[in-house]
Image (cartoon, rainbow, N blue to C red; front, top):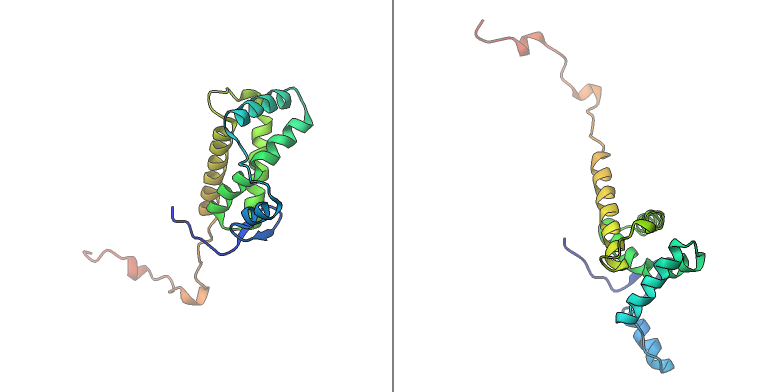
Length: 156
């Protein structure tokens, strides 16, 4: 799949940011930007968040959502190229994931599982969009009138 680059990136919440804006801001404040999932510590935090979410903790659900929503959004947007549709897909992904969180087998990271759910939801979106494409119908005046002679067997 071909991806296009643009000067501005659109993130959830319809805010446009320049590439490198976070790094520039961190340079000014003296802080360093950290990835959403910092290695083994992030994996342990994810396991704990999943356990708490399965137990019913709304804060854990919110923590998982906040940690992965932008990454899920970027994947969804790369499939549909529409901000609102991508946000709808993000919502669908997290609803599906949170309803199925007790079925998460922990054989992979939570991100791998969310990524797979996201791609499957995007594939469903594309399939549905393909099925619902409108077929142009000719106007009655553009259609030749029915003629039995046109369909007659020439061998007779």
